[in-house]
Length: 101
Length: 213
Image (cartoon, rainbow over all chains, first blue to last red):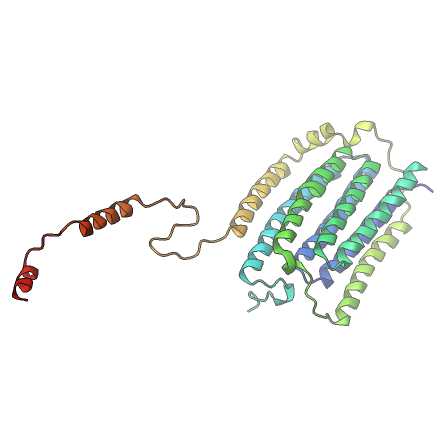
């Protein structure tokens, strides 16, 4: 059995699916952020596998940029979670409908 | 052979940890499971000869980002738990179909493709030097944009998470002021006390009234 790039991409797709399921079903914004992290990391894995497959480091550069974006997203997301918890005390994404109308 | 075993173990750890993140009701367990998932992904990066990214993954993600998650989970306490409301069954089914659909699509699409072996690369493929050459050369604009984004995110995090000072009266100290003993007022009160201790010579109408009484 030779483990080629298709195996890595398959694992990445499965992880992406798990993260997607989490985003769709969970209610706590904290877990939503964690699920988004899973999805971003699945994309990183795909980028790096193709970078290795093509023998070119550009994919790794993209993966690093994705890491920075994910870190920024976590900072802002957690800041929002803390602010919402302080103002409303109720962390349920289905009830955060203040901007609906 | 060792490569295959490491790959299989890392895949199992990554997928099981990701499932624990999504299915666990306890945010602490979710965060810790995500750390396991990230370390398994770092193993994948090592298998793909991306050494620098594996190190960055462990330091930046498993180290910094997840610690922040754990801090916020601890700060929120019970409020971070999943709401116990029952969700409709069609929602779970639809999510399952969407997730399994996108995963199966990619897996089957990739499995049908006949990928040849990638090129043989040198040991320095994922070295920091090789990445730095690209980052500071061809992708310099992306690099600068990333640094700007991180700065904006840091400022945004501070703005979002700071406690706004409540509206305060004229004599209450502000949120960032140090409360000092008020020297002026204490001087005033000692003067007042001195006035009550000694006899006060009154002039004007008060004295006249006293004489009449």
